[in-house]
Length: 391
Image (cartoon, rainbow, N blue to C red; front, side):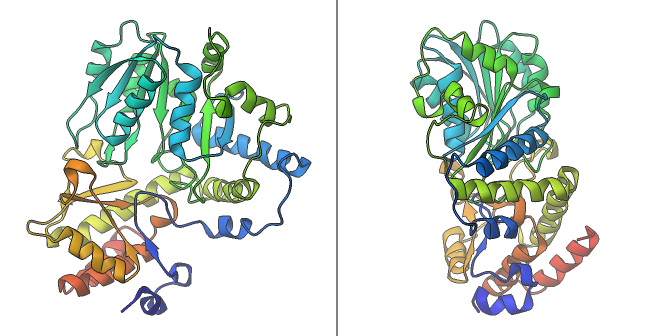
């Protein structure tokens, strides 16, 4: 049975041709999809500038920034957000401390090195969070600390508030990758004194890929202004971006239709309420684990406080045919993501961001797994788990 046939038994909002349960991209929010069809406007049109101002305001709310923090959308994915931070805030010879416990922490370290930084690493084993005491032990003399809040590759939530408390007394800037947290997990940029944060439009906000929402503190802008050399990445130079977003002068052509969609998705998230979204993802995670545990699935991240709610990392049952089952699911138009590198064939990474953190998409998964695995009762267990969570 294909998803198209299954969809007759699902709520109307989930009657899609494909079920996307990956850790990104996520299903596009219906309001964002509608906004994509708006009539095109020029990137210098007054209506576009008005929309961009609304986006900037809403990003300040989402990130929890200081009132005058600079927010903007970069025309690229979250990796451009990562690179723009190093390009603007790092100069050759700077000492940078990078927290690394997965693929995206390693990407941070590589980018910082390419911009001439002397990179120090604080590491933790796969599936474990960074220890703030290790950050404190290597902090002397660094100009920046960089950390991934939610390590997508392993489903680990790093203790950013505790790390931020240590960094704030050092004089170093704090850069945070909020790609799988901003918009669906607590994030308080001003209170934590984070200096630079970024995410991807296609993650927790369920907008189309292609935009990287960033937030820059006043302290970070002061560091940028004190650079001895020009920013090597012209496209995302903070001054050029600010000229467009604040002064409304030409810099480059923004992807206007993506801005339309992003504004709608971000507005929908704020109208739902960030605390409600945080509760929803936790309820869905508990329902999924309760349903799959009798089949032998278990949490990959051992400590509960280290588990990233938006990317549910589940250790596969012994003898489980990872590639085979995912191939069968794909035939039924359901996408599930396995592990990366050392965790390939060991875990599944189930996306619970934005519109994927809903009962209907996972109802399709449970229905398919019950058939593929011969797991009688899985659907009944899932429905009971949803009811127990109030979903």
